Image 1 (tube, rainbow, N blue to C red):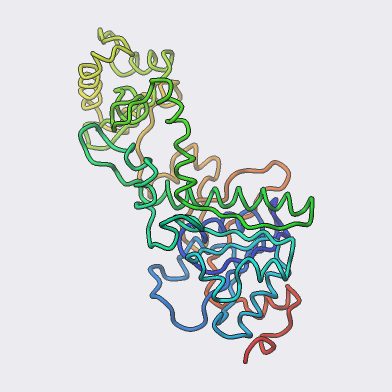
Image 2 (image 1 turned 60 degrees about the horizontal axis):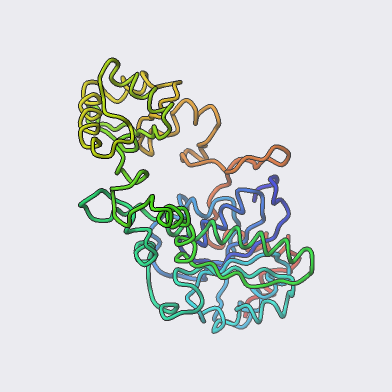
Length: 374
């Protein structure tokens, strides 16, 4: 459990789930919150990740509870009675059937903020349906927008839906509702749906579309590889460079360093974009990624090497800022964002299921584990 950070002292209960709920709880733990994860007693679904390496559970503490038993249910409600926030990621209705839904929780603690993380939301025709990041993105239009002209939509791992449209919106909602609860003493339910958040992330594109600056097609727009000066290109060694030279002054610097002396088409002459793209690609093919990275390093050409996950931590800028950290030999992103007065501490170790039951009960003044077993 972190002992510093801007959320130090904030009590959070996470009802164990997968994906966006655990990531949201991890972010709170990174920033100093006391996050207690309620794991199931006994064997459950096989874990895809060894708990020692499940980084989404870092910095938390875990207790093992059987929610199908009365005493287990009562223990969770007792925890919620002392918590400020709870994160629950079941399908709609499951928490109510287990006796730990919002009505029971808020009856125990009227100031509690009850965060619900789902893909489809708590209501609507698909609310009770199964789904995953890719299906949530599909119906929002976001997936349709990602990819090259003439090709299929490209899947952005589960970063855009689960974690961007899901976890981050849940955290914003929890902290906004927490401010209201601290002001009025009144808690509430936060209904965070991946579909809602992912749709919200496309707001800029709707504005550009209304202004006639975005076509509802892949790979034909300024920011989706339609423009030759906002794309990725292979170097002579097959490794890639990312180019984002949108503004004229950055584009001029890009061209000066890439192909000095060449008579190239005007930047925003769309009819000449195919020719410009071919000339840029041919230039990049003359040197390796590292050679080009050295050419553009420290300039305002807006060009960067495309690094792998394994390489990113060694980039000089990220290394200088400490963007990545190691804990118990495991490389991982450090806490973000940064705070000038209450900086977050080092990342915590992943919580092993049930490892902190006695410790949590003592810290939260809930007695001995024997008090909560049948």
